[in-house]
Length: 80
Image 1: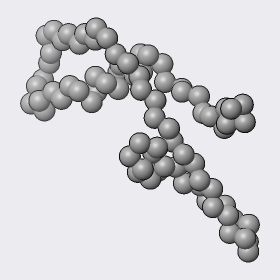
Image 2 (image 1 turned 120 degrees about the horizontal axis):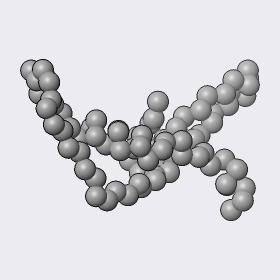
Image 3 (image 1 turned 180 degrees about the vertical axis):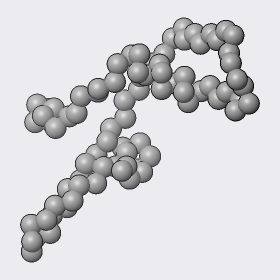
Image 4 (image 1 turned 135 degrees about the vertical axis):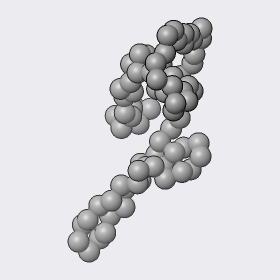
């Protein structure tokens, strides 16, 4: 398992950044609102779920050019 741990990337988001991202995705204010008098966003519990991302490197044997593709391990979606 140590050999696989070398290629694992560390999570770089703080808890505050995770909450800010959740807030931005969950709360959609109407576009015609000028000001807010009071706003409450309270999170009582949350869990961070990690999903694997596989990186596949293709190499052209003639010119040695390499291209890497990242694939979501859950949805198999190609990530950019």
